Image (spheres, rainbow, N blue to C red):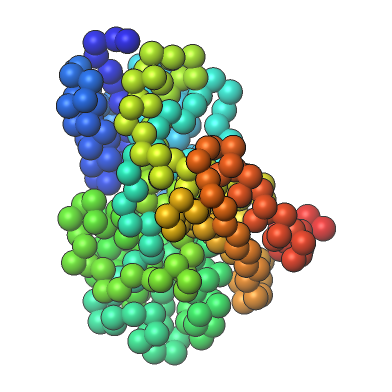
Length: 309
């Protein structure tokens, strides 16, 4: 393996924290020089249109993958929930690190929880997944789009554009902003996105020495859990235009997987839920768990929610 590695990263404060975290781990464990290559992605540039309308999650990773492809970088660090379920040919997910809190956070200067908001209060979120779940909990609220990096979203809240916003708890915690969290949603209330709270490391598929080195950093419980979750999204064509949640939790050696699907065109429509569990020790078993949840959702009418039937 090379004696110096370059990490491609977005230039938002959170993305840079994540890249520096991986940089430190690599330097400590592999004893090599590691540099960062900061990049601005299309997802960072387009802030006035919902991601579901302009290309979805891939807008945050394509430029980083281009840097890998032309060998300006050796690896890219992603928030795994932003990574498309199918990687392009020539790329591989080499490792998933130990997971941060995967739950969603309720953030508000005046209210402590979603239940405390007055009727007609304005809630900001960039996620269709959150839209349908908030609508299920509080159909009387006004849900408004919210784009921008974490600091931008918090600034818009502080300026009074929203009564509350919903963010991933992991990002707030990583940036030392845990005090902004007024409460955390129980997953039974607000099911997280596939891969939420997990950091994924992407590399060129043919870089075998680097893949082998990164495999030593892999956190097996998180690795298997996110493979189960991503299998649900993959099986239902999961993207920013599909309001789909998938969350796996360990109970001893048993992985419990819960998914929820909403209708992007009718957010007030009742959510479809599916749950299953099994003892899981391999990626194939984790993905089989995801496939079982997909089959249940399809049996319960998922096609009409996906407008495919």
